[in-house]
Image (tube, rainbow, N blue to C red):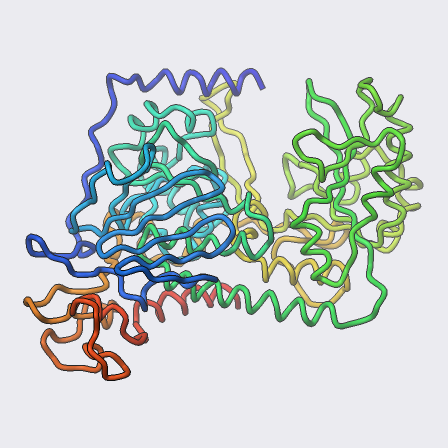
Length: 546
């Protein structure tokens, strides 16, 4: 632990403030709109806006609320996005349009030009949403633990070391971030707020309660790339998949198999313990799979069991000598096993340095059990013990103790893609709980199945190392004064727009009355057009469900 901290500190000192790089320069591409001086064209048509639970209009402003953690307000040339979990506000201006004055917004508001071109993705959870949206060609650097094939392919590009994102300690140092990624990226995406780095934004999916709420953050990420409508369609498919699986799983027999999410923790210098998790999202998955959680009240009532101060939903069986803990490991283990005798299914969450070799024998050794002790557990006897480490990545990274050497480190997609795809997770849990379904994505049987290790060779991007991303077309094209802006019709090969000045129903209110809005704004309220941009993105995503 100390060697890791020392290495991280040396890395921070290696890039002094005096060497901070020049700011990011946006490359010339087709993302930007061409506007005349003083143009009032509304750049975000309604049919391209994010779909949310609530939507309200006030003049030129459209407010869309969605998952509990975020909302967006649309103005003619920019969007104001609020992350209520992280407590941050972001102003997203269309490239080519004038940026609104900072004085109009609260102190601490962060400003971006969208769509972003070059993204730093130092944490795996947010990266999953970018991958889902097919925007990996706009990612500059990633975590060395990334599981997605295109993320791994990025690390294998020429100059791969420069594609490794800042680590957790470096993320707290705004000066370091400016020097390390400021010249090559126009945005940094993290799981929590980084107030010292103005080019960062927080994707708080892991903190949003509810498994579907978490997945809905694909819309939030889409806002930074003008892909929120495509993201809304993606989420609709995710939600439909989840609800269909839930309906099937919960329509059967009244008896519900009992599930325990259990683990053993041991690390030098820290209190060893056995533990059972009652996290809300695990409860939701379990119940929606037709199962039932272990009785939390019964477990918490066992003398010696304690809840972690920072995570009340996690109950520990500790023997560290603290007040109220178990006197010995033997007594803690006996109580732990007694609790697990009530479970029909165990999902083992114990950390394994090498998950590919973690099997039933490894669990016995790690938990300190004999075969006879394990046999007293119904889940063990019936070979109903599972682990959520079924999809992994492998990276060879520098050894902290000797940088001239490398060590193997595994990344788990359970902490990446699984958060973005709850429908597929639920299918895994149904399979574990009820024995229905074939194959697994993340939750494997400890006795009979091995993890799948992915690599960059399966990346389906045409040019994973390309410096120039594909164009994201502006939604409209400015037309002569008095004419509504031309709407984007296709972006399959190039940006194709409707003809300027051509009379259409888009320019007239549906009820035949005169509009109270300016011509440009009236066109923004037009009926939806089926766009190639959305269809292509949606089809690419649906391929992942197969």
